Amino acid sequence: MLQTQKVRARRCDGVSRREALRVGGLSLCGSLSWPGLLRAREQQPPHRGTGRARSVILFNLLGGPSHLDMFDPKPDAPAEIRGEFQSIATAVPGLRVTEHLPRTARLLNRASLIRTVSHRYNAHNPLALMTGYTGGDFGQLFTKNTDPPDIGAVCQYLGRGPRDLPGAVCMPCCPGINETGAYRRPGPYGGYLGSQYDPLFTTCQPTFARQPKVPHYDPVPPVGDPHVSSLEAVPDLSAARLADRRGLLQQFDRQLQAAETSEAIGRLDRFQQRAFGLLSSGRTRAAFDLTREPDRVRERYGRNLYGSSLLAARRLVEAGVPFISVHAEIFGNMGLSYDTHENNFGMLKDVNLPILDRGYSALVEDLEERGLLDSTLVVVMGEMGRTPRVTAKAGRDHWPQCGFSLLTGGGAKAGAVYGASDKIGAYPLDLPVSPGDVVATIYHLLGIDPDLTVQDRTGRPIPIAHGGAAIRGVLA
Image (cartoon, one colour):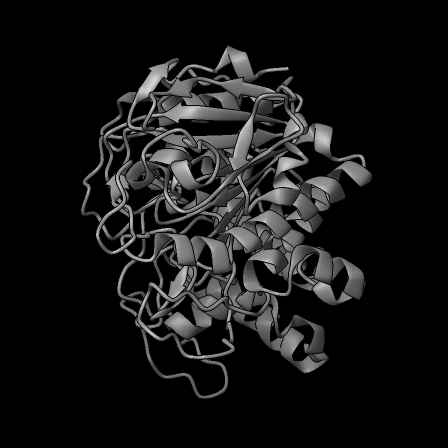
């Protein structure tokens, strides 16, 4: 029987969950093991695209950011539509955004702003914006193995990125995991490609300066850094513990001899040894070690969990990771959400927009200064927009019929504005764009054919962008 120290709990295969976690380095959210990912990568031929982007950073404003109070203000509309904010000029002539994004406004001559993202997937999860698929269940709270794979999963499936680093990373934690672990939003997963293509999920233990006055609608910024839980103990790994882990691998081999061929045993050992090498090499740990950054850089991004996650994303880009997603998140009654049914203007003005403005501008300027912006696509968007009419509680409700997507660098056209909404921001006036079109554009900029198909669990070939087409008007 497998045993190290005093672990007694056993699964039906005779291997304890704790032992499997120790050897495989499984992520908190499900299923990614380094050995599994390495096997998957070796089974896929390396893919060499011709797109300008080598990496993508997606900042998901989870909850549904109000396009009217951010990137599509309507200053001439009635007050119940216009809302409380003023608009300001930007670096793009004729383009105005909310007064609470001053740093972002100065950088929009480097970006493409899409103002006509429209669909009917009225759900609080990033499935549509990460996969292009809008046929899911609106009330789905858990990822399923029948969901389509996201962009990061496809990047890993095609063998993108260094072989000694994950091909996709999700920060600061699994979207939807709150302090009770009640649900796990669909979106950043391997789906029907298999859990071996899940991203590397980081974990976090945020702190908060105060308790909210009311749940949800009085946001308190989380403070902390993203961490890779399976790697945290590696720096202090003693020689005895290293030997213990290698011995555990040998026990795996012995236990499998009765059922597997000697060739398969050798293959398992090789992948396990490579996985062990990843855990002890330090490259992934180094990318997440934000103590290596000067204080002025930490301040530039913002001393909050999302600023830290965007800074870690820049470090992962430098290391060559192809796809990184950062998600706004609620932790119990605290955290950050763009689901502004009440106190829309207070939430945006006091917390959400200052964090976005500082983090986005710091990331774009930092990438540009390091010569990485041309090869890194930064995407800012949420799963939907908000209703044109302000409610009696100073909020705006769900409105997937019109929203925005901001694309910067990585081959996106500089200073472009694509599409216009009607006079109250309810529907596209021209050039409507689907989530599949946005995803297809990202694939195109990565040099991946959006019409590439992968098989679902029934063997049907499904296009990775679900019929979306690259938006030519935002391509440089």
